[in-house]
Length: 220
View 1 (cartoon, rainbow, N blue to C red):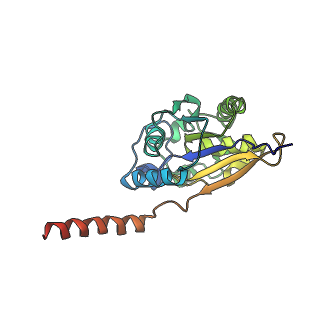
View 2: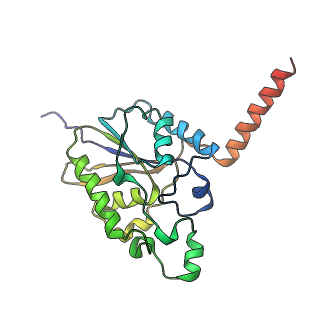
View 3: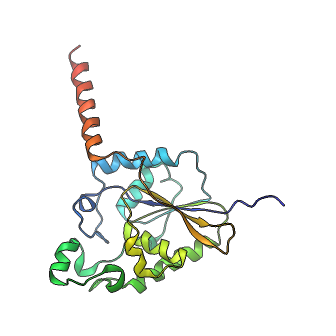
């Protein structure tokens, strides 16, 4: 019998924003990408080149949609409201160190956010997304945000939700959910791949190179 190719769910976290750079919780605040974020979204496009997807879905938030557009999938992507980031409520725009100065034992994946979503509510959204994806044939690509994708991965793998706190996820990274040998064994196949990205220092070098090129051309 021929080997059956098992489907994969590729997870693309949105590229850099001003708040992801400073570590501020960015839930439903609709921020644009930074200049480096735009460049790294294009780097993610290069990483995805050659992969074929039956469906592409994106969060309707600007940072995810723009990342999706810059990777070349904007025209075919479907907006899925359940892919939005965790609603942080009163903790929106605040950094973890500031929150823990007031609540030293606070853990997002255990406690949720006052005035926002609980872990159970975010998990319910993740389950709705996964139930939809399981009915699809072929590989799928999702564009979303860090904390939501960590919950999604935990629900896929059958890991206790609090364990998602250990799944670090960088901006413009690529991960993949799949299976080990059969559809009965969901697994995390790839996590937080970032080798395709520019670092801030490389961004400075790239910008200086462009400036030098412009000056050289102007000298003729």
